[in-house]
Image (tube, rainbow, N blue to C red; front, side):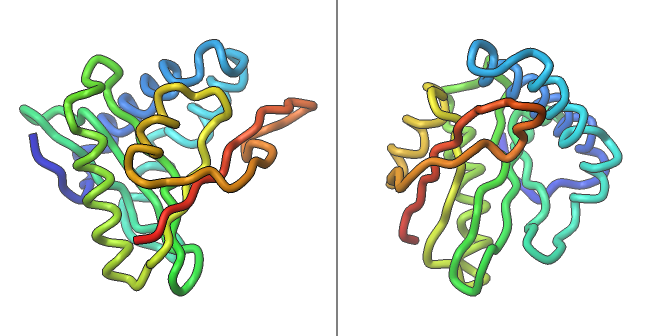
Amino acid sequence: MFVKRAETKHVEGISNVCREGCLDTYEGLRSRENIERNNQTFYNHERISEELVEQKGWDGYFVAVENDKVVGAIGGGMTGEATSEVYVLYLDPSRRGEGIGSKLMEELTGVQKGKGSSEQWVSVQKGNDKGIPFYEARGFECVGEQAAYSNEGGEEYVSLRYKRKL
């Protein structure tokens, strides 16, 4: 297994791993409608294709690949001169606990540190017992909560805001 910057040939794999990871992560925490809407909005092939390359505030996607199959994906970006954000990190749900997430996080963090980041942020769904321990084990500390970014039509999901010094 290796981690690299995503290419066009990885679009379908990114879509699949993010959709499956999202469903696995949020099942029981969010409505099925919310999960499906987020998957359609963020993890469709057209959007992922456009987001392969770096843009202002977005570092592109990075993938973990094994035997030509995407088993994990991460993306984030700079939010200020010295601050960065992890926007998305998903794994094939059957591959959790193998160090894939750690390798993806190391890759993105290295890119962001190279751009001057000394502080990294992430939002995690309140109650997400998969993501919260992962981030806390890597030195992230919860500093507050806010309405989830994808709330619509009266949804009241809550995201915890975590940060760490790099």
